[in-house]
Length: 83
Image 1 (cartoon, rainbow, N blue to C red):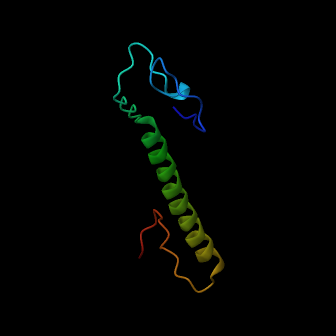
Image 2: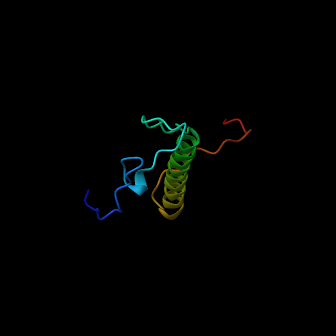
């Protein structure tokens, strides 16, 4: 048996020391747990970005209407009756 770069061949188990199998371990790898909370966090971040873009664009339009002297302002809502 030749020594390897990873360690000396283990004659008892027939494996290298880094790949020792313990009692109760199976050869199949267990599936990783599927976490759902990162998707909720991602959804909240995306929703926050979308709401931020909508809010900033509405404020930009409002500011543009205030600064533009030739823009048409919406009619004022009053209780007076035209004659």
